[in-house]
Image (cartoon, rainbow, N blue to C red; front, side):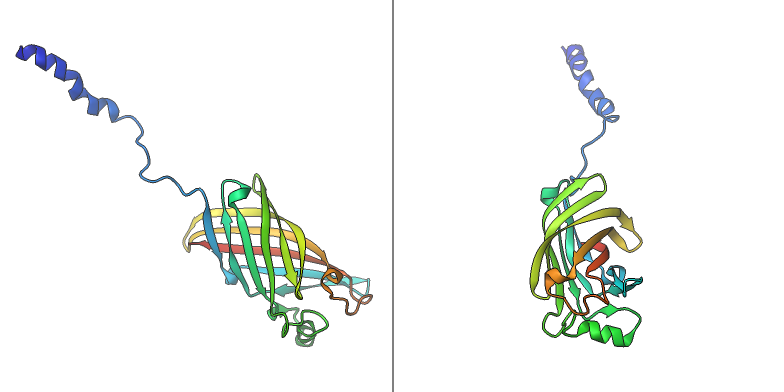
Length: 197
């Protein structure tokens, strides 16, 4: 009777050895969507406009804030950005003062430029973001192709970065000053880096 019992229990004693080589389930499932807070020090907007029909100059807008969420699909991804309109820099103090005035950005009345996504489509590392751009109190729907440059752990914490391009007609937002000497199309290069929450 005792020998029979030992024979029956022997396979049970081998179970820990048999299961040792099997992969175990992870302690926690990786987060399917992650939200990042925009780091203003590593984010901005470059803009380009034609001058006198013979050249172009570039400027920069800083003061970005907001957040973006990267999900497994477009439905779980989103972007919300606010830009300090007064943080304009074209390497000319007089020109920057003019741009902040009522002819252009009118920062006293409209201190922020905002973008809020409505829809995100993902194909590889390209995110096509459709949303509402609000400038000078007027909102227009725009589409911005964004490229995810990278995402992962860094010496400064978990981060992710994107870059994209947008072209707008400034007249759509009521910015009509100096039409002729200055072009009406504004090309914008957006870049932002986020810190995981």
